[in-house]
Length: 100
Image (tube, rainbow, N blue to C red; front, side, top):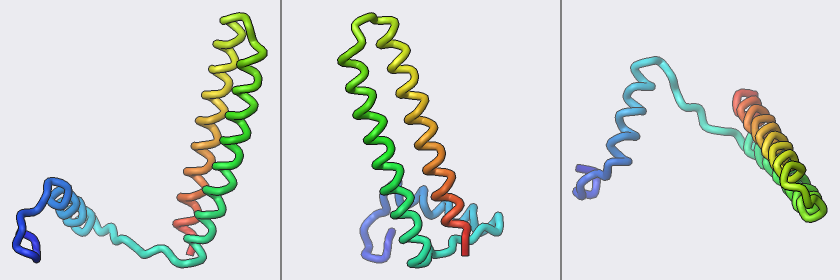
């Protein structure tokens, strides 16, 4: 039972197990500083704008493409660009979290 006397949810139980496992492995959670929060917010905003730009360009190109093969190629390129940007964003956010 939780502090309020109510039964714990499956989520709460799972989080307790994960915290216990991390503690046993010697992993400790460090709070994020205000500077890190600002850097992460800046990274997110930048990549949100880049992804929106890529999406707008993709939509414009899709309206111009008539051939299904061309549309498939454009869709594949769009997905690749979006995955690349998302991966870059996640990598930079992780790097910002590790910076002290």
